[in-house]
Image (cartoon, rainbow, N blue to C red; front, side, top):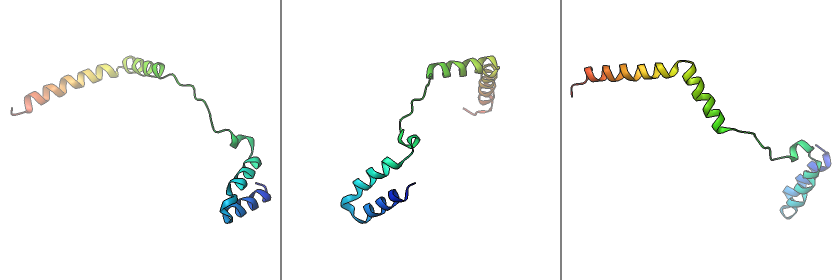
Length: 82
């Protein structure tokens, strides 16, 4: 960072009515990468969900889930007193 920009910011903090000018001068000393605040991110929510469900079925987790539900209900039925 440029010494002049630091000095301008310090003066701007001391003199509150000039803080906008100091901030604007600091803005012009920033590298170009820091000036870009908006990035677009590509996302495909439906595609991500579809891939997750496909993986859940292909890996056998769906069968394990159904068997677990059956045995859990079976054990609950025979161990409850109601």
